[in-house]
Structure formats: structure tokens, C-alpha cells
Length: 323
Ligand SMILES: NC(=O)c1ccc[n+]([C@@H]2O[C@H](COP(=O)([O-])OP(=O)(O)OC[C@H]3O[C@@H](n4cnc5c(N)ncnc54)[C@H](OP(=O)(O)O)[C@@H]3O)[C@@H](O)[C@H]2O)c1
Image (cartoon, rainbow, N blue to C red):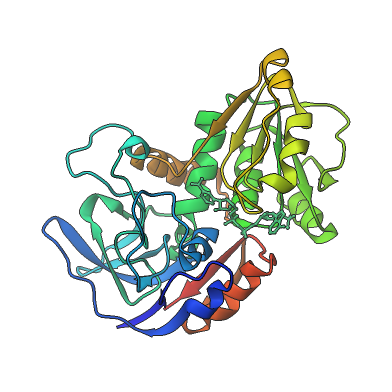
């Protein structure tokens, strides 16, 4: 079948390992279903996979079909959206705490293909009011943004959220969801275009990357890492929270202990979300009418263009690949 895959890990030149070609159809184990993919969206995770970087224990088995998000149809024609978190069969607690959890394109093939095999519970019937295009961006960046805002920041409506970065999938999700939740949404960006996008999506105030804020804020979400970390620490109010959801510019920062303890800061990590979070996100979108910001839709055959734009730091909301 048609598939976009990583041939081998390539830390410094990930696009050299990207193949638009053919892979065998996935086997469908007992209790799993086959999904015909119609839409799948790109995530930074796909670049990490090409580079051989994973949050999971154990290596990725290459060649690996890329893609962690998607929407499509079951063999009986039912339209579905994919929940990407899989794990131990009898695990009944928070899926993200399962020691065996993983997402597509780490241990099992991903969604940039004609077909993907998924555990039955991971194929959620598409609710009325959400298109397959919009649904295909929700499983990774949007799910994480939803859980981060509503479970990890402790923000109340009216309190201020600082989103580091504007242009990408995670940032645009945080802005759109944060605005709809009644938070005061402040956003930084490296570019004027990013600030304009944030304002169009509902940001109350925008700033240049690392610009000093007029006051501190109750919560910061930082997925950029070293390039924004000192600014995040300087921007959070006494008793406030920084939630780390990524490390686009690197994975090591310095944690100054004095402000941590004297300002009584909380620093938390957030990764993906539960199946219930995913269902809540779908209901939130139906209820609020939010349309996820999708900057580009391309046929899957043109995946390389989409990957190159992301590698060059030129994303605009989510990018969707279609079949
Ligand atoms: N924890 C999780 O479960 C989870 C889920 C999804 C994503 N993530 C992580 O979150 C991060 C963002 O993912 P994404 O899919 O939103 O990526 P993306 O679409 O490529 O967006 C990159 C974002 O980083 C900002 N940025 C700042 N400095 C940058 C630099 N030097 N190069 C590139 N971008 C820079 C950009 O903002 P401006 O252009 O406006 O400055 C943009 O908002 C990644 O590290 C990803 O792995 C984590």
C-alpha cells in the first residue's frame, strides 16, 4: 500500500530518511480494526521519529510508517477519528501513566498510509459537526493542549495564560482553546506573522519572543525549551505554574532553585491525554464551534514539502495530508 515512512534514524538530516513509497498493509490483531485513512496531520513528533528520538523506552523499529493523527473510515464505512495512545491491554487507569503506553509510529505503524490498524477503542466514531479534515488534527497537539489547559495549568476563567510561540500546531490549539475557555491569552512569537495569526485566533495580547511582559501571569505553557525557558521563568507569577509540553529547541534547561522556592512555582510536564480527554475535546469543539487552524492541506504524495516546512520552522497551525 501507499505509505510515507522513515527508512532509518537520521539525527542531523531527517528529511534524507523520509520515503514516499510502498509498505505492506498492516496486520490487524484480534480486537483491533482496520482504518482507511482519509486525512492525517503532521506533528513535530514525525520529525523526532525521523531523527530516531522517542520518549518511549526502547528503540523505534525502522522502517516505520510516520503519522500519529488521523481520521478515516472503518471497513463498514463508519467515519472515525483516531485516539493515538495505546498500551497495556488490561490497563484501566490514566492511559498516559501506563508504563507500556506508546503512540502510532513508535512501536506500530502510523497514519501516513492507505490503512492503519488500531485497537478498537482508539477508533472513535466522528461526532456530528466535526469534519474528517478538522478531526485529523486533534489526536496529538490538540489533545495535549486540551489536557494541559484544563488539567495541568489550574487556571480559572479570567486568569492569564502565556503561550510561548504562535505559529505551530500546539500554540494555535492553546490559543483557540484558551480563548474559548475564558482565559486572558497572551502569546509570544518570533515573527510579526505569528503575532498576527495569534491575534486573529483570539489572543488578547501578543509579544515578540522573549520580550519582557508588563506583568507576570498565572500560567505559562512552554513547548519551545531552551530558547524560551528563561523568559517562561521570568514571566510566571508567585504561586504560578509552568507546564512543559515540548522541547523544540532542545531538551536541557537550567532550573534556578531560588525563584522556584521563593516564588513557590509549580513546573509540570504534560504529554498527550486520556481517551476521556479526547472525547471531552471533541465535545468542547462541538459545543464551542471552534474550527482548528489548518494552514495547509496537501495530498500525502507531497509529504516531503510539509516536512521541509516544519523542519525550517515555517508551520502555520496544522498541516493536513490527504489520501
Ligand atoms: N507533550 C506532548 O504530548 C506533545 C504533543 C504535541 C507536540 N508536542 C511538542 O510541542 C512542540 C511543538 O509542536 P508543534 O507540532 O506545534 O510544532 P510546530 O507546528 O513545528 O510549531 C513550532 C512552534 O515553536 C515555536 N518556535 C519557537 N522557536 C522556534 C524555533 N527556533 N524553531 C521552530 N519553532 C520555534 C513556533 O512559534 P513562532 O514561529 O510563532 O515563534 C511554533 O509555535 C514540539 O516540541 C512537539 O514535540 C508535545
